[in-house]
Image 1 (tube, rainbow, N blue to C red):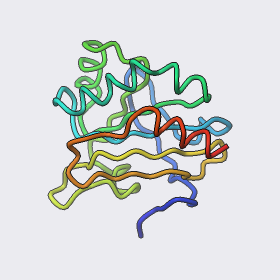
Image 2 (cartoon, one colour):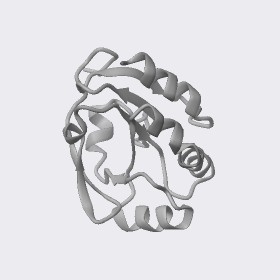
Image 3 (tube, rainbow, N blue to C red):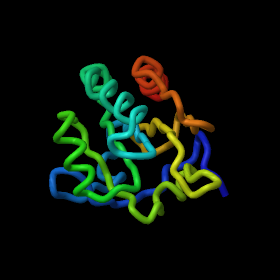
Image 4 (cartoon, one colour):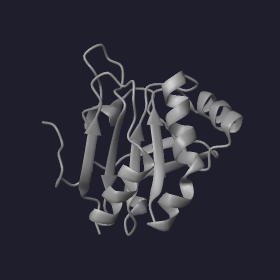
Length: 150
């Protein structure tokens, strides 16, 4: 059963950058922009995460926490994050369990570029799952989705 807008976001705990684990429900009380991306250091993913990082103040303005998830391990994420100076955590979903919970695993087993806005109560208020994943959702669209979820 696929999750959709209006559903409670499935809770999860994943290891991530900064040497710690991240639990989605620990962010209750503030909106979360949950980004699933196919891979560290790939051209579109790098452009996407750099865009979000460069405009992180826009997410801060609406009180949103950005969390980025892909199937690479923590050491890959640490290297990718350090190389680009990401100011939000990259989470390691190596077995794609969380990607499966959010319905973002494509037909060949690769995670699709997807983004969810989860409100302060843990409800999904925006969802975009890319078919090809060659583009990504712009910051202003995601910030508007956070604002609309208030």
